[in-house]
Each structure stands twice: as C-alpha cells, then as structure tokens.
Image 1 (cartoon, rainbow, N blue to C red):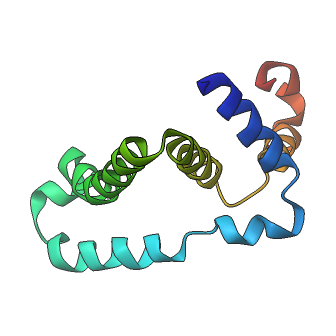
Image 2 (tube, one colour):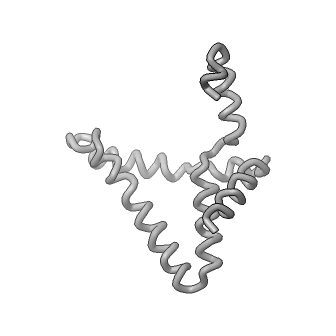
Length: 113
C-alpha cells in the first residue's frame, strides 16, 4: 500500500499544475520565527536540539491525527497520509527542480544524473 501511495503522490505532484501554490506552507515560516524569537538566544537552538524542537510539535500533531483516523476509518488514514506526502514533496514541481539542477551542472550532467 505504501508503494501505491508513493506512486499516486508522485503522479499527483506532476499533474498539479495551477494548484502548486497550495503546497506552499506560509505557517511554517511564522512558526519558525516564533520559535526562534523565544529560543534563539539559547545555545542549543543552533544545533540538533533546535531542529528537534522545531519539528517535534508538528510531528506529534500529524501522528495524533493519523492515529485517530486509523482508529476511526482506515481509508481516511491512507488519504491523510497521501495528503501529507504530497505536501512534503515541496512547494515546487519536482521535475522542474531536477531539470534546473541538471542545467546548473551542465559540464558534469552525466555525474549529476
């Protein structure tokens, strides 16, 4: 089932077209700025613990929602997982990003591929 979800998310990502802008996560910038304002002066913020503190609350929320959906109705949990996977592929078209990367590495395009 995981492979099917990955294939569906990659196909969807490729064919989103004008809906690409919905994958932009503006709340993440505000969340990170708020966390940095509160904890930016502390030494642990600029290391591994800073990354953990930023990622842990959204991961806990996603895990709780996924667990609740799995408990209530398993197909909804799969749809939620598909939604999260599509969001996490990034705000831009993955194929275009790879093309830009290969163009920027033109002399070493064979190695980049």
